[in-house]
Length: 211
Image 1 (cartoon, rainbow, N blue to C red):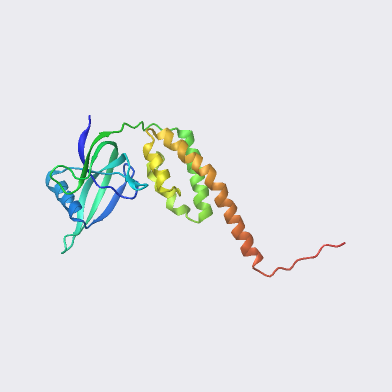
Image 2: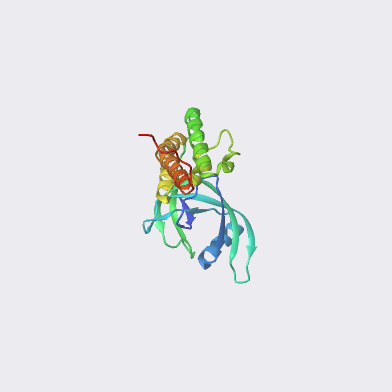
């Protein structure tokens, strides 16, 4: 059933399970944080894309206020819960400074394909080996979700939103697999090109062919 949710549009995609640190400075969102503290309400972050608020967003829970500034600004920690669809958007929630909307929760099928996960893991390792960043992925859990790695695969914000639109882990796996199959050959060829450029920058003893 639709329910009223405070909304905090940002030019980014947040995935369920993600922890997000925010610096709050606008009066309307300082009011939102106060409501979260006093009433325990949650809020949503719908991505602001193509000069408009997207219809999908991610519900957020306030975890803590890390710092309060003399001017009223705040540093907060939040955690993403789940994905929702906006049915009716209001620039101001009733009696509030911040935006709000009638939203409904999106059901998600968390079932993954183990074989696809292994292929994706292999591609990710090869990608990060090529970039010299493999150590960033050494601690991936065997049952990791696409959401856990999605910000680290070179997606544009629009592509990340496509992952948010997917309603099953299998669909997200297929999106990521296609992306990596397209990107990895380009990265590997770029690295080979860089190696050739470096090699050609050194003096070499070459034996000319005999005619």
